[in-house]
Image (tube, rainbow, N blue to C red; front, side, top):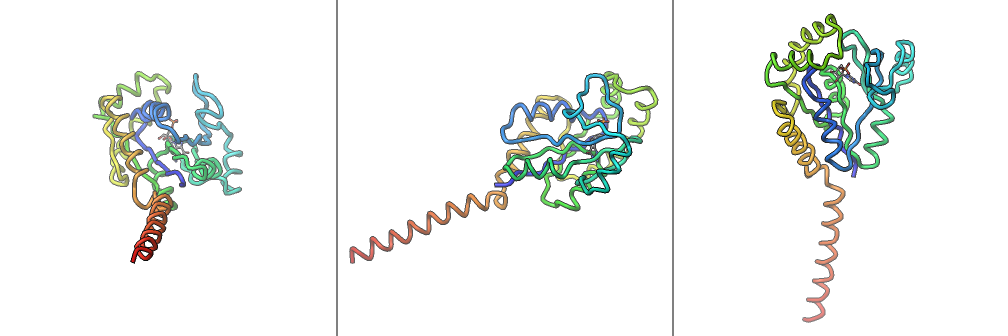
Length: 216
Ligand code: 5GP
């Protein structure tokens, strides 16, 4: 069975990173798509783990080579999803989490309508601002830009199938897990397994008829 593509978006500081980390530890058969970005590496980030950090020229080459499932300019930097990485994971039956912005979510949904889309909403603007400030990963200018952009991002929640309100991390992680597990149980996503079961019923019916035929 192929894995599901799971899009997770939220404004900067929405807490999606923390939730995704938890989910990757808890759930089996799930991977994370490491994006390409032209953004500068932050202290504590690792190339190839948090992102593949590339130059603008390298990013343009990726676009030209058709290596990206989607890409977008977010807060004045470019970010993009590797087609190859996603394909490899999905083909081996793993779900893949795409932690992407709302523009990227829209592009992926246009190409892969069956992708699962989840929007992580902070409980309020004040909490978002406090989290982003406490994280202290951005300069004052970048922080202001991200907060400014959060207004537009939040209003895009209508494009998503699910909304998880990230008030308490435990509860939000549980909600996210529930969505991912329920999506695995969708009828159309289990068709191959179901068909195998139905085939076994066919055979039973055949042998049962056979047995009845023998008795009469
Ligand atoms: P950050 O710089 O805080 O790591 O990410 C900034 C924004 O870019 C976040 O909203 C994040 O979800 C988004 N982002 C990260 N990777 C991708 C990607 O591959 N494609 C798109 N469209 N957005 C991404």
